[in-house]
Length: 206
Image 1 (spheres, rainbow, N blue to C red):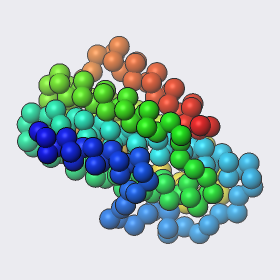
Image 2: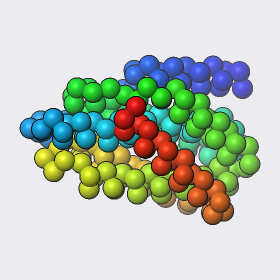
Image 3: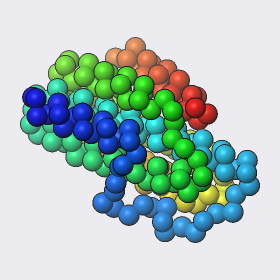
Image 4: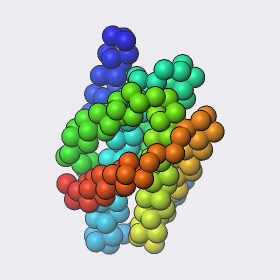
């Protein structure tokens, strides 16, 4: 457990320090640089900042949930998903740099809060732990789909990144459901949506 806590602390530092890397190529690299107006650039950057913060939260959730998972197979599944989410973190970070913008100032706060939520989900048992993944990924899929529609029409680079992220999130959720994830009660699902709305509203600007 001590080793896992040390590893978790190292992951937190890497997540928040902006040193995320990706084994897979950034999907946006296949697209040419769009000619965006200043308003379009700011809007695209705001949306990608929200997505980056979402990936910071995902890192915290998956790391905490893997720490508390009882079944080694579930722990491995969560760790594998966390690695892919780390690639999303790198992609969104790169896109923000290309747009000449920054990540959210509140990422340490969101990481801490998400880590606490992940611990709570994991403590309740593996089925609830997996059910939390299912519901989280369902809501993230909806969120990313809305961003695809809201990104500037000419920003193919950001759209390619968000589309690839959405595909991965759907796979993570389906895998957790197939592994035995239980349906969360509606109060929990509603609270998750409310927290997500607060995060997206603040990260767009701050």
